[in-house]
Image (cartoon, rainbow, N blue to C red; front, side, top):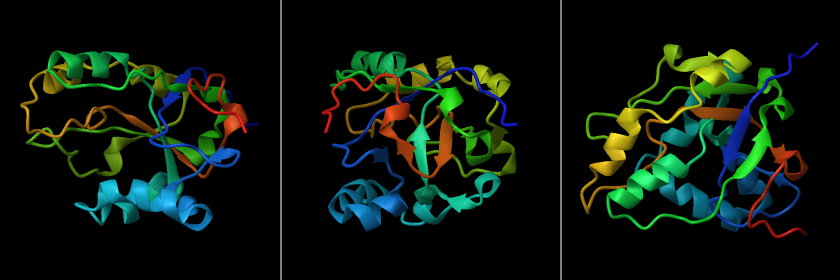
Length: 186
């Protein structure tokens, strides 16, 4: 029997969503090459990232959908205090119980020395997808807020660089989301 995971996760689609599921990049490449090109462009400066292996899931960075265990409001408020224009849309909400723990893992993230990119990962950066692990990472840290508040005008504003990621291998059906603000139903 698969354990039921308690908690809430958040997702912010970076563009319009086509079809009935949120797709990882490798699936997006086949289904919607134009959307793939749009999303893959953000990895142009780090081309090896998409092939990075996520050992607990037996797949690559391009094979997962990214979710957050924290609501983005505190991150965006810190960016606003740093003088950045931030998105006003609410994130999509998905109950953690919808995800299969065998296909999901929590990846701890550490900001690198510049604060603009994550440090390389190691095997200790992965936590099992359990209620206890999710509760341990569902708060924005003071360090994350301070990093965002101290950004200078030319610095990239990567709000998620030191926020744990919930990585789900494979697509996520849209009807699993309990809330999809701003979504256009098809």
